Image (cartoon, one colour):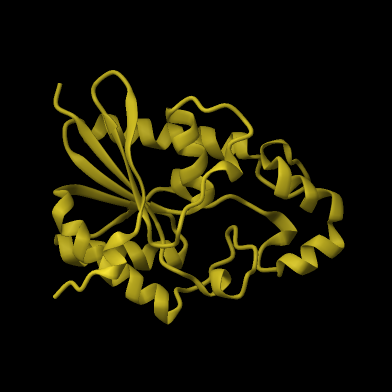
Length: 207
């Protein structure tokens, strides 16, 4: 069976990243640097031979997807399966504020977020399951072709852990830069990872 290549894109730098705030579903826009990153990434995406682009509904992801779509010649589609994690009261707050007001929960987030549970917070196990369901659906739909998912690190990390069957705790064992892309491939039987956290393109000059 012909392989299906799936590009997992983390959005460009947002105001929340720059201000060191917890983001979740707070709708931070891209920074000027994030716009630059997204435009450079879009130029690279022309090499991916995409058939579709799916995105989180948040503006930082949608804008990144918009640049990719502009270079590839078609529009992106929002898929709620790739929406960011819910962080409840933490969303839009500084990490210092959270550490001061939720010391035990913050300690858990920094050490073993897979086990963290509190009101308004979406457990990582639920995030992982819904993202994986969306991935399987889109893989079936675009079997033998390539597609792109523009989303957030709190979606990409659990998703990669799921397809590679990496057990908890996994979240803090990998790092993922803004505007990076990774690639998983479905060969008809299994998913495998063949590229992770690619950002070398940001150092190149694309005309």
